[in-house]
Image (spheres, rainbow, N blue to C red):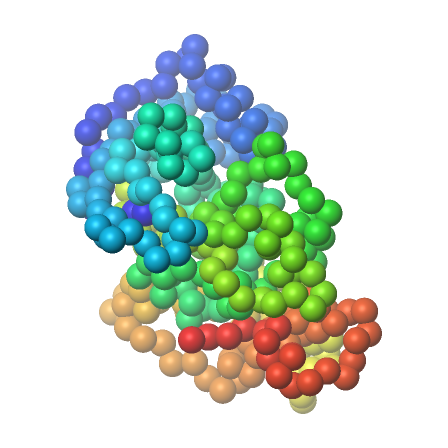
Length: 324
């Protein structure tokens, strides 16, 4: 959505009389944004909230023949309102999309957080999916995120299985790199909740397009900010890590996993590092082993915790990451 350059048409400051209404609107869409302490992390009291009206310089036109699959049909807006803090760091972006996906005159407003906001409030989206560093580069180029290429946490699986409030549910999700709690992208769901529920059920087929990339670190919306990258906080050690790590390397596995986000972003030129920025990064065999062990541990815990072992190698492989 933000692959093309953005042009700022105007910049204004939110009036004090409108500030509370804006924060209330954000709290209504994102319940975890409720609370003065949380809101102050993004928009401190006493500081201005700026709005930027921006337009995409080169909006992508849909093919004349139309998409082959109706689920691939998406109307990309070319006008956005970006909400920034006093330092013009973009935290939210608002745009209009046609209601019901096809109406020409009926529109509904969507407001999404940027990765800068998610780095401060990572739990804004109830749905989050993890993928491996190699997929980040493909998403950066506009590729969709496939269900077969993600790891789904138990909390997300339970949320989908138990059902969510469809009336207030926002069909978007955040994406993290495996081994990091830091969201790196936002995408719109390309399958409805009923289909997602059936595919995450025991015995379900983990295939199909899951998310269409809307915003990712490194795109033009990210470039409106200070282009910073927050440090990564490692996840707690994965279950079974002691049993799966040979030679007592479980600690090394957890620490190397915490660095995967920086490793993923460095080839894209987003991780800094002086003259090495933007150059491919060599990954050692130990790092690859640690990443594989972590993926395997999460798969065993989330997909086979009910004791349905042994399983065919092909079945286990279908539940793990598939990198095309």
